Amino acid sequence: MQKKVVGVFAAILAVASAVSPGFQTALTEKAFGYIVQVGIPILEQQLSSLNIPDISGSAGTPIGTVDYDLTSIVLSGLQIPSATLTTSSSGLLLQASGISAHATANWHYRERSWPNIEDSGSADVSIGSVTLSIDVVIGADSQGHATLSAQSCNINIGSLDITFHGGASWLYNLFSGYISDDLKGSLNTQICQAAVSAINTQGNCCTGIPSSYCHVLIIVTIDKTSEINYELLQPPIFTNGYLQTDHKGEFFSIADPVEAPFTPSPIPQPTDTSRMLYIWLTDYIADTAGFVYQQAGILQVVVTPNMVPSFLPYQLNTSYFQDLIPELYAKYPNQLMELYLNATKPPTLDIVPGSANFTIPGEVVVSVFMPDGTLQVAFVLGMVVYTDVSLAVVTRGSNQVVTANVTFLSAAISLDASNIGQFDVSILQDVANLLCTQFIIPVLNKYTAAGLPIPVIDGVSLLNADVEFGQDYAVITTDFNYNPSFKKHRDF
Image (cartoon, rainbow, N blue to C red; front, side, top):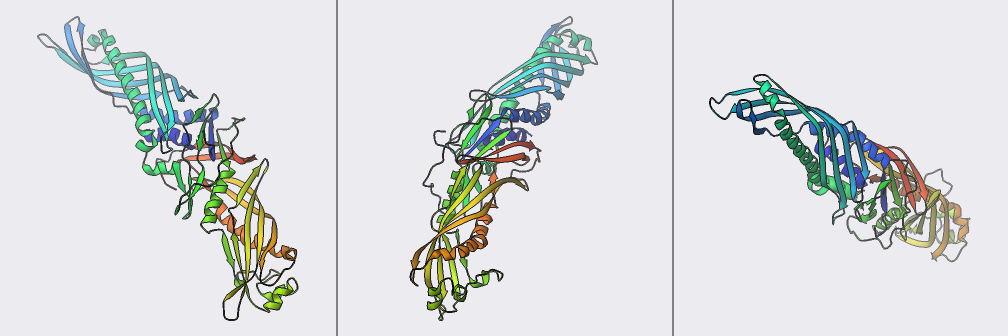
């Protein structure tokens, strides 16, 4: 139970620097209000299950000094009617007031002097007007994990009334004030210890939550080629209106992880905090993904004759190009062809207010099958492909994913090399466009549609998410919902 309630805070904050981040989040006051709304009922259950130690002491009574014990103390019906969660200079401040609860216990006393009279019975305890304040410092460790540490806990029990039943309960009622003070002290200690333990032991990702959960927050595997690093670049930033976290947001090759040869552009400060959560995705994320996949040789396609749909006007046989490129047909009459499409440089994403576009530098190597079955390069086209990009936030199972859809805009072609002499490549513009729509764009969408997982824990789902484009970034504005599943943390 403690892992769940603190896990909500830890996960949202870790999803809520001197080096510009590639991925940034801001958790707003609206989110804090919702966290209190869903977290307080869980906290009420957690505190209601506290193990309160037995209490013993001595007091003077009309019959002499007696030793007393209060045992089997059971807390129930704890209610927290009012609570707030706000930012402080170094973290969060949780304040609750009007807390009330009921407790039952067994009592026993024994007179010290002869004739050592003793008796026992039960007791009802009414607790009210309790205030609780906990300061939580949120930071980042050297590995980029979020850390939470309770620096102080203050509790004040306004009223505590005990009514004794059975036996000589009239005697206990005479010195119930002694026992009330002892019980207040015990409750103060137990409640604060429980809260501090929950935050310090189980709220710290790398010590209290399974290692696979830390991995979800920091490193997310995308496919067999790449993973994305979400480590924190610095401790979270706290303002009056929101909590901001700056993350690396960089794709890496699993086989050969190296830093990308470029850096993110700065992200502007939030101007709107009307939603619960804001997530900034910079073009740096897409650019590092393009770098990884291009370096891995993923962004290439070999098109053979049997791959060309029969309804297309151009088939991979030199006969179909007899009128367009007479030189090709003259040198290689009625021979099958093969195309090698390759990204020669990493694709780059250009985001401006209102739109996003991919630029993909590449080449088309046009080869001809010779009678002996070998391939002969006829010519090489340089080709730069321009596309439009749209983003959406979707739910896949328990995962929140940002997907992209790429649509073809245009292609610029040039003749980079030729074994059939020079010719006007503009006549191949329609062919280049078909190559883009039929082969290049589907390959890109295969990867972009797979999506970018947003690091959240089980039970957290984004609500009514919108995507807007700014200068060099896309921002997701969203609310969220939390329904604890009480399942083991999952890894992507």
